[in-house]
Length: 228
Image (cartoon, rainbow, N blue to C red):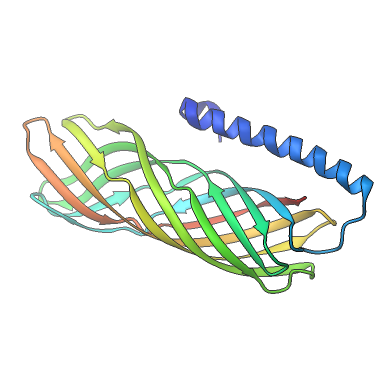
């Protein structure tokens, strides 16, 4: 992943997140020297994770005028998330990442039609239950909400405009942390996000094509977490 491929806002967010993570790790190390920390996850802990994720749409749609189905390409990117433990078992996690997708309509009356590219920013908040917070292997389940923001549309030739409606969705999550040291964890995580958006395409001759689209992506990732 090359950071320069992202739009300025995404690059700034990634750099700011990395700086916050570095500062937080330094603060956490200083706190560790001041007082010992109990093993495992505990109430009041904060965990910051960095993951490499794949966002894999599982789309279905209803397209007017030309028929066919909306298709969104898979995308891979980096993700940053923050968790706060209300109790040893219960935590809230906020996930932030952005991905770029190539959009098209497949199998329409005129064949396949490219729509261009669009960026997706779907911040997701989940409430998790951690089954074995004191064990080296600590699985969890979660559920929550996501809000999908579509931006920086790059419209294909022959089209005047492509609009994507921002939308709320529901997220389900399963994963585990594996303790490497008192503070460092390996993490693997999968989410299913139920997400619907309306796509409106205006062609160069003014024809309007609408698509009611369920993107319903899988989000799979692996990475490292640091516990404060």
